Amino acid sequence: MNRKTSKIDVLIVGGGLAGLSNAIHLSKASLSVLVIEKNSYPKHKVCGEYISNEVLPYLKFLDIDVFKLGAKKIDKFQLSTTKSKLISSTLPIGGFGISRFCLDNALANKAMQVGAEILQDSVENIQFLNDKFSVKTKDKKRFEAKIVIGAYGKRSSLDIKLNRQFIKRKSPYLAVKTHVKGDFPDDVVALHNFEGGYCGVSKVENDSINLCYITNFDAFKTYKDIEEFQHKILYKNTFLKDIFNNTSLVFEEPLTISQISFDNKKPVENHIIMCGDTAALIHPLCGNGMSMAIRSAQIASLLIVKYFNSESSNREALEKQYLRDWNTAFKLRLKTGHLIADLFNQPKLSEVLMKGLKWFPGVLPYIIKRTHGKVMKVK
Ligand SMILES: Cc1cc2nc3c(=O)[nH]c(=O)nc-3n(C[C@H](O)[C@H](O)[C@H](O)COP(=O)(O)OP(=O)(O)OC[C@H]3O[C@@H](n4cnc5c(N)ncnc54)[C@H](O)[C@@H]3O)c2cc1C
Image 1 (tube, rainbow, N blue to C red):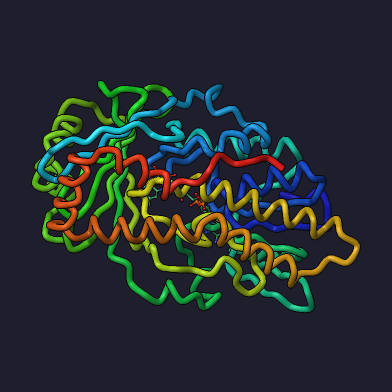
Image 2: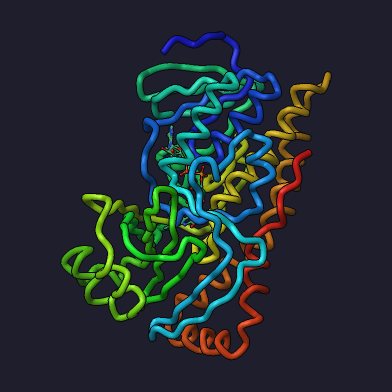
């Protein structure tokens, strides 16, 4: 693809939720934006695909109507213990279910419609010299840009090149996702626990049901394959057994990812503004990574627009303000997320916790509130 313009204001590495939300916002503000995304659209991704309603006003600002795309409104929450005891609650803000296949594709189309360019290639190196970035791709292309946003997701070889600390530690988590068809209420998101992990269940567009589970490698490695693991471990939870046995598969093979790390990361590294999972990944048990990705894009875009509009653009001030705003928005919920994930990693403790929740169900909406943000304001 030939670039329409030679000058790039903002180069975005990765066209997932964070990258594409940035691309739309910045293009709407008349900045020249190039997104480099290694995959083509549409594409399925391993994700629970339940998004908190907190992002709806901002998605409206980006001109994305998820309900026109078929998203399901969700306002009920179910949590079951490894011993199949069910706790139900309402969701304080509520949310919706939509596949990444559909949402990322809609955002990509919108980004191009408002003037962003999307190049299918993989970024291999980012260097910062003399107050500008030089970016090299797998296809041996080189680009220069004033600002680079890192929105390349959970982990990448770029993290090794940037010498990021979290990449040096092994992570034990792996995840499996599939879509199935069958009976499940439109308005419920369920988290069913099993020994060593939990499985999220919720509907997305086209009446597909998303089944996505996360477990640690130790729980998984003694079984021959996914099928055996599901039969021997997941099916001990009768809710999961019922769902898996009474639905038909949409995907031929489930999608899998491994090495999922919830370690701390830095939201600005080598002057790159990190957004979404590249800045931090919250444990999906607290279910809010997608809205964090979209919200971090809003924070970054607002500051980047200011940076380009000011006569004396100050990179240091931009980076400091991004760090401040990012910490204000996410630090507390990440902390709570880590705490909850640690508790659920200890089977006996988590069973006691669940018993407590059964006795005091009012605590559940409080925990949900602590791990979710407030409805986003559009400035
Ligand atoms: C098992 C699991 C379940 C989850 N369930 C939920 C849920 O139900 N609700 C929720 O809110 N969150 C959930 N999350 C979290 C959510 O999926 C992420 O927080 C969200 O996808 C982050 O979006 P992103 O844009 O930061 O990254 P991504 O969506 O991962 O986008 C990154 C993009 O960068 C591209 N890329 C990577 N490297 C390069 C490169 N070198 N060059 C070019 N492109 C590159 C990738 O192809 C990708 O498209 C879950 C996460 C997991 C692991």
